Each structure stands twice: as C-alpha cells, then as structure tokens.
Image (tube, rainbow, N blue to C red; front, top):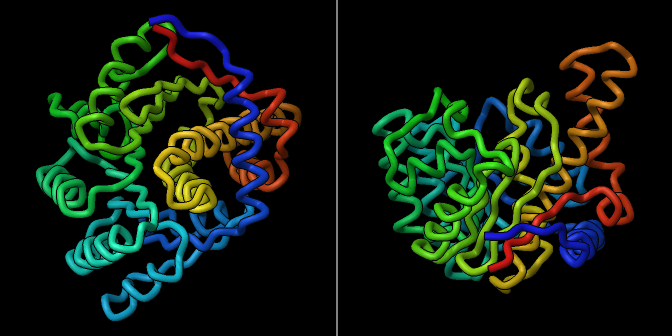
Length: 290
C-alpha cells in the first residue's frame, strides 16, 4: 500500500465544512451523559443543531425530524439501550444516517453484547471508535483500557498498513464507513481508505473528545444527505475539523503556558472558527494507492 497526500480530499472536506454550516442539520444524540453538554456544544460550534432526547415515548418522533442520529454507549442503562434500538430502527426506515460510537467495546461483556446488537439490528452507516474498540468489534482480543485505547493499538504512519487492512475489511463486512481514531486516524467505506494526520496528543487529556468527534461526524453526515457515497467524505471532514481544532487549541495553550482547562475552551472555539480555507491549507489527508 502506498499513501500520498490528497489535495482533492482537502477540497472535498472544505466543501463538507461549508455545506454543514449552510445546511444546519438537526442531529439527534442518544449519548454519554458524562460528555453530553460537550457534544451539544460541539454540534452547535460546527454549525449544526443538537437535540438530546432519550424518552422512549418520543425518540422515534425526534429521529423522524432529524438529519442524523448519533448513538454512544458511554454510560449504558437499560432504557437507554432500548431507546437507541428504537431510534436506530426508525432512522434506518427513513434513510437518516446513523453514527455509532462503541465506547469501551472490548472492556466488558455488556458493551460487547450491546455493540453487536446495535450493529446487527440497526446497521449503522458510520462506526466511529478508537482503534482498540474497532479491533474488539472486528474480533481481536480486547486491549481496551477502560474506555481508552491501549498503547499497543497505537497507529502511526509506520504501521498504518496493517491497521488499514482491518478498517477496510470491517467496513466491507458491515457495509458501512468505519472510522478509527489514533495518532493517525483511518477511515474506509470498504473501497477507499483515508488517513488523517491532524490532531494533538492533548485531545486525549480532556474527557469527551472522542464523543464530540462522533457528534461532529453526525453533523457532517447529516449535511451530506441520505447518499451513502457522501458519508466517507463527511466523516473525514469531521475528523479534520477535530484534528485542526486540537492543533489550534494547543498552539494557544502553549503560548499562554496554560493547561487542559484552557485547551478545552480553545478547542471549542476552534470548532466554531475554522473555515474552508483552513481545511484546504492545513488538512493532512492521505489516500491509499494500490
């Protein structure tokens, strides 16, 4: 596998940013209660609109007026699982894109079972997790450290080829986009593979950066419409947005000699302030060449 930087991909994600801000898609999130406020604020910052509804009596109705649905199993509870399945099935009936974040897959039997149930019964359009979670869903022995990725699953440009094979095969198996985060992010729809090299390690020092990324992915997928062909580029765009926001936030933190509190605030600011030209100039997107 040969990788090259793709200016064409930069242009596509720049269009995705502009499209999201112009479309203002409503994103329904049934998500991690630890990070629910950050997810809502991240969606607002990128130009979309959030709604966080979990009551079984309204989840289908809310999903029917939304442009995307995000399911995140970070803080599992029985009624929440039921709400996810109910909303997910309604979304699939209506062609509303579903993003699934299998938080902690590989850490417990419950998380593995719920992840399998959602994948089997809802059939998400995009699965977004860290590399340990993705490996667990793929069938490898779990290396997950709580809800964090294990160091042994770290992906760099030096070992990206092996990881890319897993992501591509899993995407083909589940007929969806699979997007794995790490030092290098890998995304595939089973045909094309993209690697995103934007980001900063401090993103791992604030809680919820992965949850926010899943929410951003929902926003970009919602703006892309109901065509599966656009979901891969939408996910890549969301990954670039989060990565560039992390880079921008750290630059401000380093200049001020500050820490994670300021980083969190500046990250949210950057999600709002980054523009299409930033994407064109600063995105580091590699595409696979056979």
